[in-house]
Image (cartoon, rainbow, N blue to C red; front, side, top):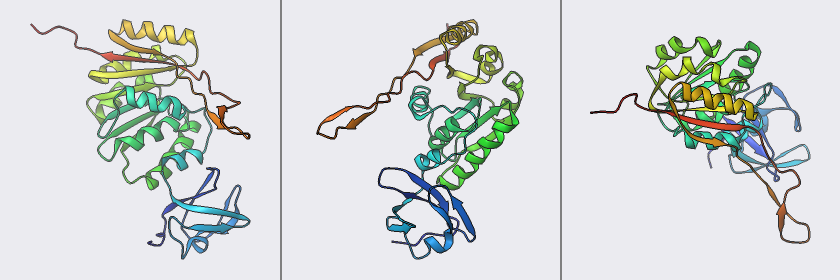
Length: 270
């Protein structure tokens, strides 16, 4: 096995799944749960796939990827979790080369999941109205760029979504998908729909049913076709001490209502 390269990100994983991200470079660092040490000295002579001792802990050195980056992200704003992110990415058809607008960047929880599937040929435009949230999100995305083998053409715009039409069209003439995560998604549809290609999809992330209803009405006013509306429920199971498996004690119920709408051609062909 080849040794760990300088500045390479690795994950030190505990047997229960917890992981700590660190980069091989000189200088003392402090990682909560592991302590203080020089990561270059610690990792020298080791390779990915080996066991390493840090203090009293025996850890596995693993290649850093999205799951480790997500677990170790800096958080400020509430993020869209993997339960909803995966569903949205699949329903909206987001993949290699897609052009995506994300409204409400926050701590970059959703953006990290989107960037992971876009590849070098994709484009992600993240819009955040609050500077303090944008700064935290950028920290997480900058580190993810160093971890992923491919990273999209990413633009972070600090502005209100209502003012975004021209900025988006300067980056790419039209987008394939948009995800709106803000308090009143229906108020910004007029600035986003003109950027969306025919056949492209918009998703609204709505914590309450009243927001879902207003977003639904707003999409219909913009002549969008509602494809799906609802919520995703997750329930984790665990292994029982006396044998068998059972539902976990903390089920993940409602996080938000999701609304997905499509832009169709305005006139039928004759």
